[in-house]
Amino acid sequence: MAKIDGLYVRVQTDSETSGTDAAIVGVVSSSLNITTNEIDTTSYEGGGDYTGIAGTRSADFSADFHMNDDGDNLDYFLTDQKAGTILSFVYGGVVTGDLQISGQCYITAINITASIDSAVNVSMSFRVTGSLLIGAA
Image (cartoon, rainbow, N blue to C red; front, side, top):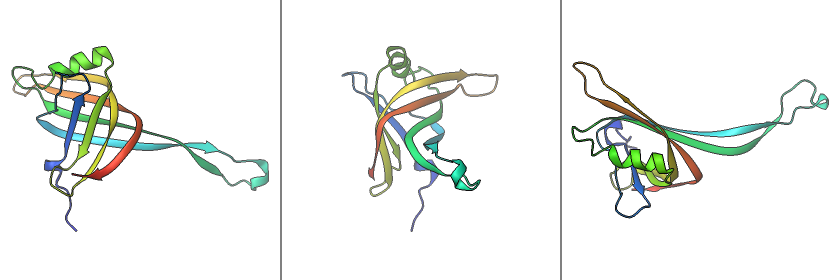
């Protein structure tokens, strides 16, 4: 079974607001975190052993990318973060059959860093709201 090369993993978001569709371009790294909250059900009757059950699930993801010189790969996201816009996203490979995870999210943070002899870097964080859909490209 072939593996997805990290070079081909993309994070895309498309605003639900007409005319503000945008995709993150120039991505150099990204991560997707899916967690399940734990509900502690330990009691004295458990003989000192931990017991628990699964609670709610949550997910967040981030992407780091180089800002284009005209900022066109950032400007829509700044507007969407300010407005609290709910965005659609796709995380995964782009080759037919590649795993893709999609859903709805909002931007929780945008960090822009710059230094001498370095490209301007943007780091964005997103919180998933609702369920995740798992499919293929």
